[in-house]
Image: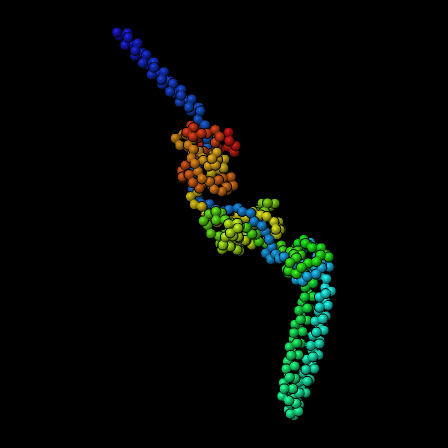
Length: 368
């Protein structure tokens, strides 16, 4: 009996020792499987909220040039793409018919003046006769009326002469502003229609503005004012150029569902009128957001995003909502709280509840 009890005790002791050894072995194995990671403490911050949209530049006083009279183009008097001054002649329309009309108007003025001189003499003569009771009252008043009619005819003839002179001047099509003359849209010999045929355009290179549009979704509940910071980014230079909001439409275009805006730009040599640029408009501030390295954020198959945080020596997947990129960081607008320990590397090797081992030294630039 004593031998049986002794054997049982020995077996029990052996089992305990064996179980303890297995647990320690499992712990060592688990520790050896823990993935080394670097972490960073999440801390909320305030970041600007901006949007990037496409815009197109134009001259601040860009004008389309149309003829004021109908006729064939005789000549083009400028070089395309070159600077022109205000009142420089751009095109010449055949002036012959307008010169004839002006000469005819001049002749009509001379005739009206001669008729007025005659009526003036007759009115004076009839006035003298009227005083001597040598003519009737009717003859006297008729002479005065004829004088007034001739005077009015002369005024009308002078007006027509002035109109003909102005019309003749329209045969020389002049630049309305200082600027850069665009491509000629017609060639000499072309018959152009008054107020209908576009000839060219002139834009002021040193005074630019950019036009762009925003939807209500883009506005994100913010309001645009003339104080809203705006920048233009040109692809070739990639250097932001500061502008100033000068116009915001008060109604939505029913065709596009957007509101039109424009901003003044300083004189630039890199940007020309008519070029497409990126407009970055800052609408306000985002409070209680977090800056998280882009490489630490996962995009899931359903289009959502998540990060891993360190909790109880394990990686825990936390869904987050993201906003804009700032440099190499992503703005996280929801899902994190102050003090969360975000895992920065080895993201591809992790899964939810995977054991991890925190490493205190600085993370490497590339993931292991």
